[in-house]
Length: 410
Image 1 (cartoon, rainbow, N blue to C red):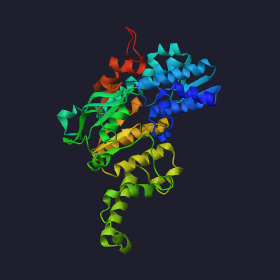
Image 2 (cartoon, rainbow, N blue to C red):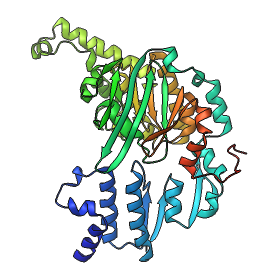
Image 3 (tube, rainbow, N blue to C red):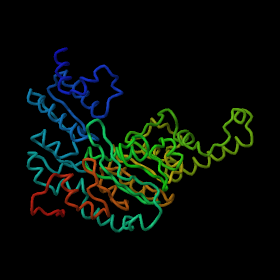
Image 4 (cartoon, one colour):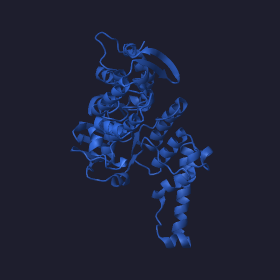
C-alpha cells in the first residue's frame, strides 16, 4: 500500500509538495489529482470518472489524462463522462454521444470527431435555437451605445502559479443587459466571474462598477454596491423552509437591529417584520415558489433548489447578477423553465445578467450577446448567431474543422 501511495504522489509533483497540507487547501485541479491518486491506490479494474476536465486549466487536464493513460495501460478499464471532445479523444477509443437522454452515436471516438454536426447541435446550438435568439431579446444593439455601463473588466489578467488563467480580458456590461460567457472547460469563465465579484484579485487590469474602480474592494463591498453572485453548487441550509430561507436573505429590509427592538417589539421591529413578509411574498410569487413555501430545502429537487438560490440572490435587489452554471444538474424540462424564468426576471427587474453556461441553447435563447473564451482569452464577442458561427469558437469546442467542412448544421 505504501509503495502504491508513493507512486501515486510521484505522478503529481504538486501533491508531493503539499502532501502535509489539509485537502481543503488544495486548488480544484489538485483536488482532482488527489481523487485520482486515491483511486489508483485501490488498483481498480473499472474506474468511472464524471467530468474530468470541468473547470480545469488545459495544462492540468494534460497531467490527468497522462496519469489515466498509465492506469489504463496497467489494465484498468476507464469509463469517462466528459464534455470536452478533445479530452475524451485523448483517452478513449470508443464513444457514445448522448443528447437529451438519447444516444445519437456509438462507435470509435475517431469517427465521432469526424461528425462535427453532432457536437454542434449540443455545444453550439442548432439553427432553430440561433433563430430564436435572433428573434428574441438578444437582438439588442451594442451596450456601449444603448445604456450606462454598470460593470466592466479592463485588460484583466489572472495567474495561478505558472498558469495564465486570464490574459488581457475586457468585458463591458450595460444596465439590463444579458451577457453569456461560453467556452470549453478551463477557458477561464468562472475565474472571470471571481474577478468581477472580488473573490479573485487580478495580477493586472482593473474592475469598475458604475464607473468606479472596485478592483481592491472585497466581495461584501461589491455586494452592497449592487452585485449578486450565484455558484455552481447552491449551498442552502437544508433544514430551513423555503420561506425561512427567503426571510434570511431579505435582511436588506431590516433596519431595527437592536436586541431591545426584538424583545420589546418596538414599532421599528414590527415595520421590519412586515417589510420582510412583503418581500418574501413577492419573491414566492415572482419565482413561482408557492407550492414549496413550507417545504424544507432538503426536500427539494436540484432544480427547485436552484430556483430558491436564485430567489435569495434576487432578494438583495442587485443591479448585476453573476450566474455560474445555473443549469448544472437539471433535467431538460427544468432547463427550459429556467431560461424563461431568467428572461422574465431580467425584464421585470431591469437586471443585468452575466451567465457562465455550457447549455448553449439556454444561454443563446435570452442573451443580448455572447462572449467566447478559450485558454483565458476572449476569442469572439457579439450577437449569439455571429459568435456561434465564428470559426475560432467552433474550433475551441470541437477541434479544428477540416478545410472545406461546412459550419452549418444539416
